Each structure stands twice: as structure tokens, then as C-alpha cells.
Length: 516
Image (cartoon, rainbow, N blue to C red; front, side, top):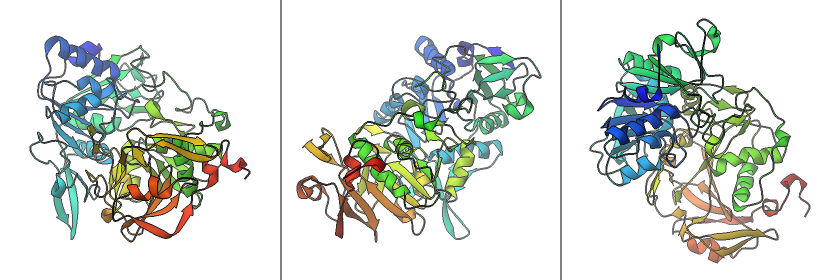
């Protein structure tokens, strides 16, 4: 193991390499190294024609994280689960300047193990019927992507998808401490992700493994049980003492409650202000109350705030999980999403998806961009945005119950909560309930038998009943025809027993303290 600078690490990348990079949202990303890659390309126009492989959306939705690679010529191909955090790469895909593939986040996390083990890839049911299925495009996100890499295969009388392995020429990772032999610990990281499998995959591919750390310790001083990446797998270490490039996330320099070094009282969390988003989160939270000690998942965005709602309502009868590998606690939001305050345990990302793919989640709360009359959902590509699926498809195709959350309309909506009612000054130009989604991120036809699907918005609740999206609840005090039914496409059913959404959703203070 050699200690090198971030600039020297960037120089290890050669034209045409396949490069795998760790990270989840704003966490666990080797920012100093990827920033140096950008600097080198701007100065030297090198390296060129890289293939990038990463599982989760990694960036600040501006320029950091994988956004450092967002230049024409630097990148030839991207294979990623999440694109939301890297709009530079998304724009290159939209402009047809790179080849763009979207595979499920969980599949890519598991793929590192397959590469390390010399296996042909990941064979799974995840993605069947979606746009990642070869019959629907094979995960290609633009016209410049020449052919699908995903294959449909038949085993034991069933159809599966094969997401293929590929050799990794360079792997860029992040840890906390390296000793003089290159052994790496992760004590200040919010979660380990797949750093061990990625390092093994890089080494067994004959590639270069580079790890960014905060500090170097004396040989033999690290407890063996704390070492997450053995030194035999590490070629180079980059020491970064800049908190801006090695903070716990892109949103926070440090937060010891994510790592268990400090366990604050959850009651100290500030309640969320009353808003349209909070109404949606509250109504979604009510779905939890029907289940006894469920294992749940909370997606990014509006769903992530449901954990804080549960805290406000003193409801602890569930175990939260996040795709990053975090179990328990109160999920962090925005650029720290993936971490949690006071987690009970943290496991590798691929192991979390093993549990998900086998049906381990009782109920999941996920975002949505579009939902159609059959209950198919699009979160991956809409308008002029490439967002990707992240762990959405893994979860939506396997959980026992799904609650999709989001606003009823988008584009210019002016909605307030006034006197316990919704005041819709101007409605959004586009209703999110559509005749047919632009891209199928998840299809209920490939969900487990008996899965319940609910769609929660600020003004209406829908359920998928007998293969048809059905309106079941509406907000109090609104013009139902003007603000709901006239905006729905043909094919959406209306329940014969249409209910009024709970008045407590629109009231200040905790719902448990509401007095009519």
C-alpha cells in the first residue's frame, strides 16, 4: 500500500477504464479523488471514454459526487441505479452524448459480489416487466445506448433477468482510518455500503483499488474486527483532512448520532412545520397503524419524513430499514439521506437488498412521479429529468404493502393549509395520475400475490383494486369534481364508499393531541 495525493490518484485512471465508485446520496463518497479527476480532465482532457458503475444516486444534485465526471469526452458509458444526485450526467444522457443504462440499485450492489466471485452476473426477478426488462428496452435511457446489456433467461420454468458482470479496472472507495499496511476501518462512516465486495471485485479483476481516508494509524493498531477492507485488497490510500471533502455527508460535516457515538433523545427532534408535504406524510403514516410491528422501508424525499411523523406521534411499533443498510432509528433527510439517527444496526447494502428481494419488507413508503390507471408507477424518467430507480424496483416488486406518496399535481400549484382545510389557489398544470406512465419503473403485474398498493396525495387517496386504480378518499372542504375527479383520466374508478380524509391531517400540533 502506498500513500498518494488525490491528484496522483486521478492520474491512475486511464482512457477506456471501467471505474466503480462508492457512495450513497451525499455519504461515503471519495470526494477528494473524484474532484481531482474533474480537475485533471479540465486541465489535460484526460482520462477519456470511461465507463462508470455505481449503485446509488451519489451527489448533491449539483456538481459534487459523481457529478465530477459530468463532461463530454470524460465518460463514454454510465451504468447506475440512481441518477438524481448527478444532473450533469443526466444532462449528458438527455443530450445523447453518453450511453446511459439504469439498473436497480440492489442489483448493482449484489453485482460487485458476483464480479468478485467470477460469476456471470446477477440472475434475479427484479426488473421483470419494467423498462429494465429487455422486452421493454433493457434499461437503456436514451437513443445513443446501442443495445441492452440485460438478458432475459429461463431457468426451471421461470423467466429471470441476467445483469452481466464486467471486469473493474479501477475502484474508488472511502473509509475513515488506514493503517500502514492498508487495512481500512469505517468508524466515522454512516454505513459500509459494499466497500469490501467492491475491493474484492477490483482486485480479482486485476484492477486498481484506491481508498480515501481521514487518517493513517500505526501498523497493527487497528482491531481486526473493525477492519472492513483488508490491506491485501488496497493498492493506494489518499489521506484527506478537508472536512468539506470528507464530511459524514454532503449536508453535514459530522453527526455522531449516525454512527452510534452519540445517541440523542429522539424527543429532542423538532416537529415538522405544517405543510402540504406533512399532510401527505401524516396520511401515509396512518397506514402503519394497521400493522403489528412491521418491518418498513422509507424512500427518499417525502417518504423519509414519515419517521419524524411517527416520532411526533409517539409511535414506535415498527422497524425502519433504508437501502443503504441502516436498520432502526429515525431516517435522515435530504443530503444525509441513507443515514439514520440512533440506528440499531448497520449491514452491507447488498445484504439489505438480499432481505428486500426475498420479501422481507412488510410495508414500504415510496415516492412517485406518475401513476397510471393500472397502478404502474414511473419514478425513473419524466419531463426533462433522468432520475433512475435507485432501490425503488427492488422494493416495489417485493414488499407486502406499498404506499406511494406525492403531490396530486405538479407545475405551478399554489396550495396552502388554512383553517383545517386545503386552500387551492392555483392547481398544478399536470396531474400525476395518468392514463399510461411514460416509463414503467414498476408494474403491479410483477408484484407478489396479494400485495396492497395505496397512493397518497394531499387531497386524495387511491388504492389498486382488481387491477384498477380506485379513488377511495378525498380531502375535506375541497371541490371534489374540480380538484379531483375532472382531472383524472378515464379508467380510474371511484369507490361507492368514498371517504373523507381525516381532519387531523390538516390541523397544527400532533395528531394525537387533536381536539375536534
